[in-house]
Image 1 (spheres, rainbow, N blue to C red):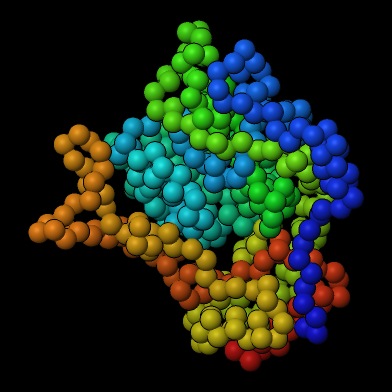
Image 2 (cartoon, one colour; image 1 turned 60 degrees about the horizontal axis):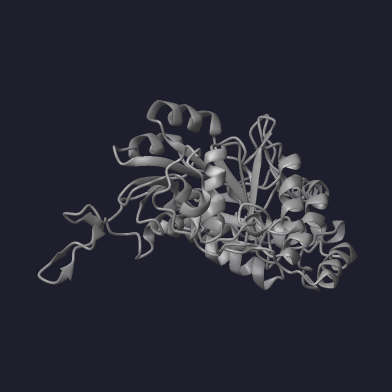
Amino acid sequence: MNKKFRFFSTIDKKEIIAVNRVLKNKKLSSFVASKNKDFTGSSHNGGRKILEFENKICKFFNVKYSLVVNSWTSGLVCIVGSLQLEPGDEIILPTWTMSACASAILHWNCIPVFVDIDKDNFCLDIKDVKKKISKKTKAIMAVDIFGQSANYSELNKISKKYNLKIISDTAQAIGSKYKGKFSGTVSDIGGFSLNHHKHIQTGEGGIIVTNNKNLYEKCKLIRNHAEVTIGNVKSKKKFLLSNMIGENYRMGEIEAAIGIEQLKKLKKIIKNRQSVAKKIISGLRGLKGLKIPSTEINNTNSYYVLPLVMDNKIIKTKRDEIVKSLNELGLKCFFGGYVNLHRLPTFEHKIAYGKNGLPWNLTQNGKNIRYKNGSLPIAEYLHDNSFIGLEICMYEFNNKEISELIKIFKKVWDKVV
């Protein structure tokens, strides 16, 4: 490529006008955590733009409740905290995901249990989920990776059988649909990321969506310190209030104003990403030794990343050498491998429990005894050897650039086949 790809951004005059209106109003936040007569009103729920944004989210995604927070990481912490878990309870999640998924579990002294991924859609492997369920399992965190959905039909069957909650991390797949419904809304509770390289952004931010009022109310408390819970939540509330450790996860009025304008553009943005992906897939289809995964029937894909897989029986050149060649020729949008959270030092040992039931590091003669979490062969092999990702959501691609990308990719590929 003779020039660098332009970074993808949908911020324009509409967002600037919306932000200026908030600044002229001079009220950048209406949240208050301390006890006062208005705590159950705007000072607990946020200002005008927060409430407007949440209302528009509910209408767009066809859910009863939504909650905006200052990051999707904060959203995950709120969600896990809303499940009324105890220290040592387990939540199953795929190893291919961002570390925030696991750290949100650890935040509540619960245990992340990693499962392998499906080789066709890169979401959690249903068979491995079933193997990992134990008496301590209380929830499953599904991650809708790269823009496509996990298998919620099977997950919801497992949920009913074992009485488990299903969490959707749809950070990379906002606007994608699973059997006609938006991903993130076909579980007990889920949500989306609004940081700067997602489909829509507020700089930083997150969205929680649910049809469960109980979970919504708890998330709302955790978002705003929860310090005045006892004084303000009436006895008519039917949910338990233990473990309501709150934080400051509140979004400001400026971010909410940006989010309102961004949400209006979401359908157009997804249509653009799908068009780009379709053209690239068409240009690369049929290359020997290259697999381009397809989206399941009745589902849609918002294409945060276009996943490609090498057949290492046919392609003898190492994946990292291929990616290096693509990068050197100007295709910085390609990367090799993804994530294996279970290999990180924080997670590669099994946590033991003391007499009080709380987790503690098991030691012998003053040294930690480390327990391997076990091999997750599909995720490990793809990460180490055969997975190539194209960051569609990070860059702008016009037709000329797409043609050049395909031409350069084929040039590299012809040399390795």
